[in-house]
Amino acid sequence: MSRRTEKPFWDPDELQALLQTRVFGRSLILFNRITSTNDFLKRLARRNAAEGTVILADEQTAGRGRLGRKWQSLPGKGLWFSFLMRPQLPLEKVGVISLAVAALIADVLTQACGREFRVKWPNDVLVAGKKVCGILCETQMSPVNVEAIIAGVGLNVLQTREDFAPEWRERATSLRLAGSQNCDRKALFTKLSAAFDENLFERLPQRLPRLAEQWCARCEGLGGPITVSHMVSARGVNAKENTSGILEGIGEGGELILRMPAGDSRFFSAGEITLLRR
Ligand code: BT5
Image (tube, rainbow, N blue to C red; front, side, top):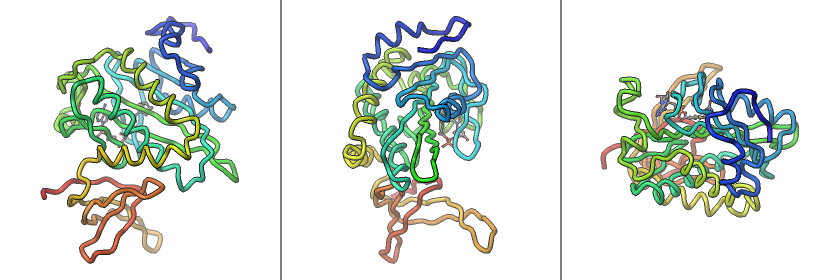
């Protein structure tokens, strides 16, 4: 295990003893403060860090969402961590991993917190209709195959309403705000670690279809009308476009399948969805 000179917010030896995992967190690095756990782990991954390496921070000063968006990561308020996967998967299947991570988180939280957690395509975990957790999976490729997936998880645990920027308050929540029975960050991290360890490393290709089913079982809006906001490019110019239809499910690579009014299906591998009233 690597060590930093400053005393970390949790004792890494004690935490590792709690985890009892085979792969996840066998190499575990804790930071009181870091720019982004994904950025740090990406650098380690290029230097051959072992599968299952985890970077966990009490605070991120430059936490990121997709497309360079900011992810608010206040000190002591959440679980901000990244873990390294080296799956034997073709690139076109990699998109399912972030759904698998979301499904496992939603299952663990539903059991631990006494609330019903849902997932929303592509990378959100929701409780009471608001985002409580976001996932950012980033891929490193060699010329021929997938070398590493850096899976970043941001779970809001202890924020009050005032902790969120006013423009996020209607859409963001924390476990505490949702009335969770369990807001103990260490206990929750231990439960999440066990679920990831059991499901995401050994025999992943065989497990992915079942994890995709678990995701669908918790999917917000499945079978209902939605609008997908996505990018289109024509003659070198990118523009945002909205397409509406019925949320039919997900493809083998985690793409969203939208049933169009004419009965045909369209696949989307990136974008945002808005649920429409039925
Ligand atoms: C995500 O992006 O939801 C992925 C978030 C991943 C964060 C983790 S933390 C550990 C690791 N290290 C990193 O640097 N990142 C990962 P996206 O779907 O693009 O959502 C971002 C949007 O969510 C922002 O534009 C805000 O509107 C909103 N947001 C920001 N911080 C939030 C928070 N703490 N809780 C809920 N919503 C938030």
